[in-house]
Length: 475
Image (tube, rainbow, N blue to C red; front, side, top):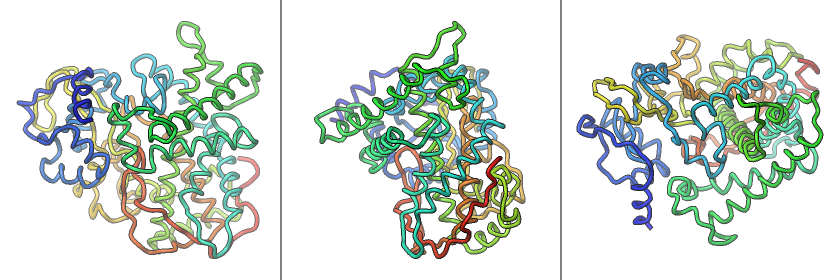
């Protein structure tokens, strides 16, 4: 099997690094580095940083220079299309899930066009119109929780964020078809994130073989086919009955034209929809779960946050959560201590440059290591501690705090995710008194393509604080 991997690895189009200029390079074979990155990413990155410092070379699907120095990251991310360009086909690990036309997998003009198109729906006033949906969906889910009965918080929060993004993308999260799509999406993702062994399929293409309905990849592609069928049905239905009054993202994409006046194909629409549905719920759900864990793990954080939320009064608009500095600090510290994304998207050096004292030739692939930046003791004193106050005491630069990446690949859903995180947390804390079932320390591990808790987190509702919504009916 590994022989097939080496044949594939030699055949892909990668750029050779000037290894004589980079002395900080891992000596173990690429397949073993991939295994470390998949099974034990946190400890592996920490060990690399401890041994090699701010810059070192790894070899996953291609040789890459990893950087964790903020000044070097500024040099990289602030110079997209100058000294650096985005690596074409640099995100192909996502293609089996998201498709060839996703805003994440495309590059160049196509990426720029799709990015501009989607940004209009995920920022500003349009984004805030989803606040009521976020609060209402959260209240629907928490209304099913029973006093004194433990439950798994991960599945509950995933249900909330998936319903919210389905409403934003498709215009509805209710009905038989929506419920079937929700169930199918969760099953499909479980075949990737339920075990590091399954994540390996994305990094080793020779494992992507359909050996029948009970084989790992066979199960995945059958679940994916069902999701595709439901999405194509949704697309066809919307194409047949155009409605200019609709404000969902699918309607926007259907109406959009490229620079040649061409509409998006059904395949292109499918790839954008699956990208938004997956990225728009999985990452946000994991962030909210981590936040709830830390809030209830540290009593002073919970007490201070509840005081701030209660200061808004019994009824407040979802948009009011944007005015709460401590809630913002709690969310930022959650995204700092265990960032969901471990790496920025890779760039390629265009012009010979000096980075962290090393000369890099054109063609060198460079990637920012988000996790290592967020663990720097010179930036974050006692970096292993959850301390929201650090974000009240200091304004960090976009190269010191980078949970959503940066440059031209800054996450398009950043504002939407931050807003949703705050609305969902405020809704839960204003309506329920929760506790952790166990005070056991939860550690990070790979959860599919994000950094999630290493076990299921059980919580219990001690009492329901209010019988009616804290939110106004209108934004």
